[in-house]
Length: 177
Image (cartoon, rainbow, N blue to C red):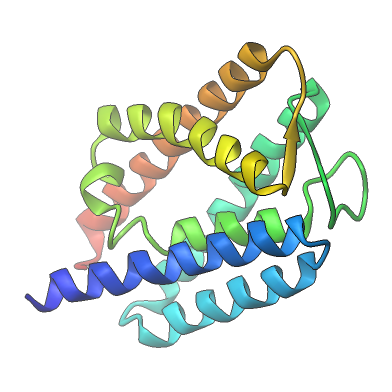
């Protein structure tokens, strides 16, 4: 019961940060969403029993996310409606979302993140779905041809989630959750 409640809180905090970032960018207030997401990552760290493990996952997620997003930007997958500091780099609010994703890997997404095939499938489907939702809300514009953009997102996110899966499985062998 306690684990289930913790997972629900973890998921709710993630979703709150996701919407804050996307709606902040859509309303041309990207730093508001960024700040909210960072505060929520901080809350996660304060509540975490194993902060060093969580910090490593957050750092990894930001690094992997930066690589994935730089590749997507270079490939012409999308453009952002606000918050971009340097055109070739992802906006800070998007990297904050990757940090937030890391906070779910050992909690609400643990059943997906600890198994490579579900992680691959979740990434392949979840990445494009998240960007389609972000486009509908006005934070990002997917560039034509749409099928190519969605395919690139699917591949990038599938690879990212498989990487996270390998790391979470390795950490799970050494550190109890």
